[in-house]
Image (cartoon, rainbow, N blue to C red; front, side):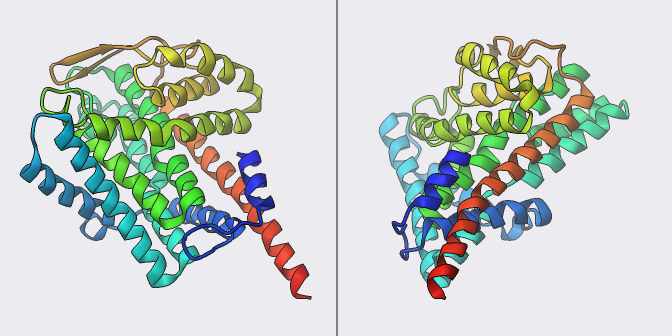
Length: 331
């Protein structure tokens, strides 16, 4: 990530839309990451991502057909809505302001930490049934038969995966393509959450959304692993080994990277049997330590926070250098 930031800082080219400098865009994304940690997300009633989800649910209801072609049209429509929304925001308030606003709206690090913290608190208090009730806010697996250790594992795995989806990926897409990039990424990720499941209904219809999400998260997942190693330098070697040797066995090309990095950094073991309705998945172990426990949930959220702050700091470097250059030229 430092290399990405340095490359952005050294660039004299202008991004799109509006000809904004990459250094200014990087500063805007850094501000958005910090704003999300401080303020969090708006209420669901006025959240644009929630409105987008409702729109795409209506599109699915009208267009659903058991085939890849219909699903591809569905995915393309959703991405188009995201791009149009991002472009409209940039034209309305300016590129940098739109990048800050849209990146903040599409980032959910604080919400992730809050949701994980609720489950962790219930587990530490011995209220397993309450922890199970809160778990669907984080994962899609069936919580009814999970014991405390399995609930804890599910939360830590969710924190790892969603550090990519809810923090690093929207930030990097905002850096690359401003407000349209962040909005398009959130559209892709939301579509995957809605229809990208390997169920009978979505096996073909959700194929395009799931593959788009894999592509959109490929670089961010690996950037997340680098950031994990950077903020836990004493465990960097273990992170590298886990990502290189264990992550490929995971069914997801991106979630496995993030989960392996978190497991190694925390010194715990993730992976096991997951049940999603009538579908059962057996996942290879990630990490070499003991199984995750309730106390590891807090450690995972702290690690996710540190990754966020490290990314914001890396993005602040080109922003600061660009500001210094502009002041030097104005004298």
